[in-house]
Length: 222
Image (cartoon, rainbow, N blue to C red; front, top):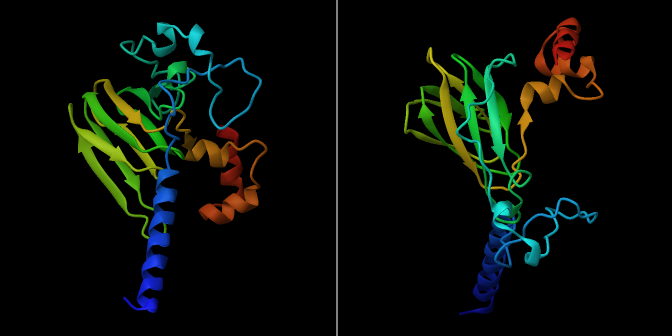
């Protein structure tokens, strides 16, 4: 092998290893011990939560209950309720890179368009019929959507705007797993029109091609 080809091979290997590193960093860090139960009382701030002394860990650090109970879907305008099981509810999830949600829908209720900045979501319908979808990034902004029935499973890629809608006349229920102990949620309408302090109405009017009064009315609602 001549020196130029050898240099190219080394360069390609370096690029490949760099890409691998970035992919590895795209999800929660892998645990380096059996478990790291979150110590919510620790004053130390880290990217995650500090581990509790393993000697004082109990079975309840890995347990929660209540996901058999339907969430209240009538006290909000969108007609849905999300019950979250993350590290705040099960301290033993700390460093394990997973969480779970139950989503209840009133008839024609929606889980409004939102994103999870730190997780991909996999959802399965337990009861009812849902219309779901997500939108790809700029410039395509392709809307990928499907109707799901009981037992169907759908994936929403990390960071993309997605939604679910109950298209039936009865209640619907879905469960979803996410590959982060704290996926985060950015609900688009709440974030844009409910920012505190407000985003300038002039900016939003130009961005959404609306008049300023309409923007101010939307801000008042959120």
